[in-house]
Image (tube, rainbow, N blue to C red; front, side, top):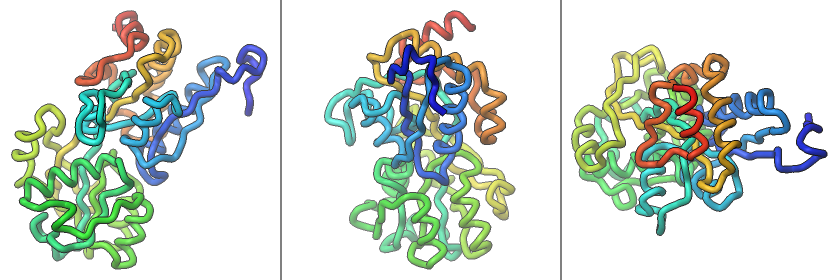
Length: 299
């Protein structure tokens, strides 16, 4: 309910946070963090917003439409450098590094490589999702141009899942935490008619062209009931705010995150992969000075 301790009904205590599609991890963990802020920070409440993911969340924070946002390192790097989809450097700062987003390429089981996606119907997720950047870069590593060589749709994870089930899609590119419930739904429903594609042969090219973003990663077979471990790439997620956020609020928001990691691990398994050890590793996005204060005082 409403809090009355926000200085006589002052709306200053209302914050909003960009998350993602409802069957992705951003939405689940973002909701858990929002609830913690409401419980722990007197006079504040956070409303998690359903969004298309990182690009939209960065835009909303930069414009002042949202106070907080979740985003992935690939989009954050383009934003801070003013490259790619961003015409100038964006005024974002990080409160913390979070867990990793794993690239999932879910294909019909007869498809054995990305090269075989030529002419196929693929979804790269909502416009501005992590999958949209990484898919273009992965397909490029396979000699394909996403615009010219595939029949690409930019639709939400929920719609992509439905498209795979209905036989309207041949592949989904999705980048998210483990497990992502939408992907579990596809692999559970379609069984051996689909698989999570192993990306080993493309990893080196991707890392060479985009250094310091993608790390080699493995999705264990049990996560999506696959026959073998799946080699893929992963990238960090960040919790971001605008550079102009008041320092004390940034310190408090960082404190709620770092002080309640066991509670976040209860909300989603990826919560346990947010750690104090890695929290400050947000390069190239600078930490907000208020977050720096928290980390200096809590080494």
